Image (cartoon, rainbow over the protein chains, first blue to last red):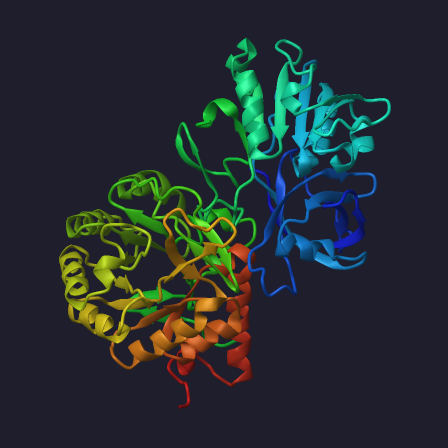
Length: 269
Length: 303
């Protein structure tokens, strides 16, 4: 279990990336080094000065940049909490509880080819995951989907880590990338035997569709071939309130501590 | 530095700050943030004789200044707790109190009998007030006769301090408190969550899988204070106050209304280190008000 911290971060910048997605770049206010985080872990953000918001907001860790000592959080405006977070300005403080959850499996990554599939704000944990997989000697490709290419955030960042494939529902394209019309499951790159492991984060129907496609593959018999990162309504983030449960083959599991990452074979999908 | 020590029916607390069942897991989840041994004690997750899966998802609705939960006492059962969880907590130099719930009197009695045998469990909190279980739970806590019946049966087998947790979802909480006092309770803790519901207007559906659930958090504090105040004037046994305590000032308000100890619940979700701040804040308040002992402010409300 990794040590968890409650830390005040200072906003370095808040950048609007797409219509609904913004990027918070944060650094510890006291100048301390950002704690070790496993890719796929998340943070609980305290939302101050918003009477409609009582609980912290769980947000995936998008990137830990050790050179600048910055934590990047990719956030989608969805309700009162995330809207308030979107109003944060440079130099303001944000209280963060982190790192939480289990993160993606990195074991035996060396020499294997990972396909990281993301949709919408679900691309968030995949950037750091890509970097950590590279560090562990893996090969990384991304398959990112959106209604249109304009809604897919941070494509240039993903391109620094590995080859990027795109699907857009409206058929829009990004110059120089393999863009295909439709859903991620319809991209020709997603086929049996092409990758050694698959990691997915996105809207539930997308994750279930990917799970359906790969669950018939022989490779899925191996442990952790396909892992998905789930989202759930959460209060504590520490596994004590038992609100964010997912029904698994082994009974109710907390998404905040037993997850957010699950092997699809353990889920009742 | 005032003396923060307090006593609940023979249970010695180094300070009046406990944590509320269901908001603090088994304590160790918080050891990155606080020194568990600085607590007066902590009350572990609601435990039933038999394991429970709890209710289906969704179990949570956020509301203004609060949240509604519908967890439904998910736990692994008394025997599992005693065998696998408690041994990791037994050596802690604080009170590890078990919250015991049930759906019939026989289950309460058997659970209490088993917990009575564990030397390092100094007290139990008998939960007759959970709004999220279909059978039993709050059903026992809403009628004075039924509350007295279950407390009396547990009293026969449980020989250590017995704290009975009361629900606010009644016409007169003072009547229930009197009934459990008469049946042999050593202390009452109040309040459990307030029966509540949340609606998703766009989808025209309830937010929670169980439709109704239990409201907690800052929103319930005024109700909890009223309940503590009423019960303080109705019974002689010590009161443990809880409901919406978010900071030291909130805790002190409960002490002034007559609580001899307090439990911090939902606030742990927002600030996992809040209990330490509350202990320090009570100490600072007592100094500022020239008090030597925390007992000086218990029930000291000037009316």
